[in-house]
Image 1 (cartoon, rainbow, N blue to C red):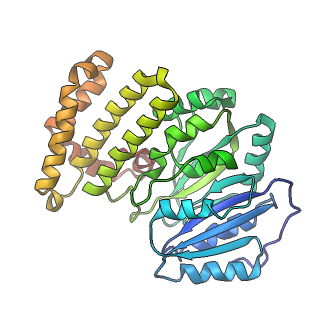
Image 2: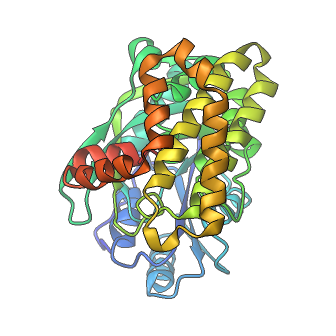
Image 3: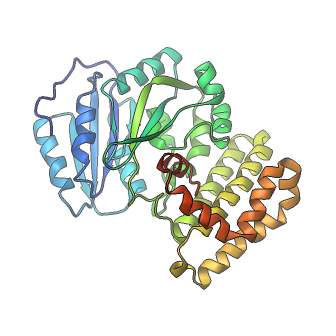
Length: 349
């Protein structure tokens, strides 16, 4: 905890920062300090202690004791989605920013995002990401690309298209949200990969999306994180999230049905890759049945894969016919953490 933290002169619109906290006593101090050191002064930091069993909750309480901008809520352990939804029910700000408790941001990030949001009258304002490992070594970057990076703004439809093309990360923490847009989404509770699930609804409610290249969110890639340790249930949640996103996207943008369908087909190949990485001791009958289901779906659409992209079609064949090759590739890739960390953010094996 930084006792020298000062409170800058407040700006007119309050930004509510929602930080779910669960067993991160090693990093939560750095996360909260980075928020209290923001040059944008009119913030509230909503810390939702999601039933931590280490010292994280006590650390949060100490912050609320000495800085009035910090509000702490202790809940039962219901998961990241529930903590975010709970935080949304407690905010008082006109804008919302999500941050994970093992990450941090530079002092000017909220100011830069807010100023861009005002200048573009944006419902969402997107920033870039820098990736570090557990000891703080930089292992990669994830920067905005495509139309949004070139023009600095787009509408919700183009935002969805950029996300489906992997030119934007689905990570919920890389955006400043107008409050009405944040409140329009509901993270699915009891499931993983919630950021993917809400993308369709998010795009439907964002009329203007802006990009601020000067703002950088720092993501800590931990070995014990959700995306680094996939099992069958988490992989099922990936597919559930993809299908929910697709349903919402088709409802909001029916003229994009073909693009959404192609995105879903490609996500199924990524899901098959993830299944190939499941350890041998977890490959039980339930696993084999689910993998067979996914590969059957891929094979049924092979003519479409071939017609659209021979490279994608070849990848589809390999993941279905040679899962051992996929696993070998995955193991080799672990020697290259920069590539691995970036790909994990997209749910790619």
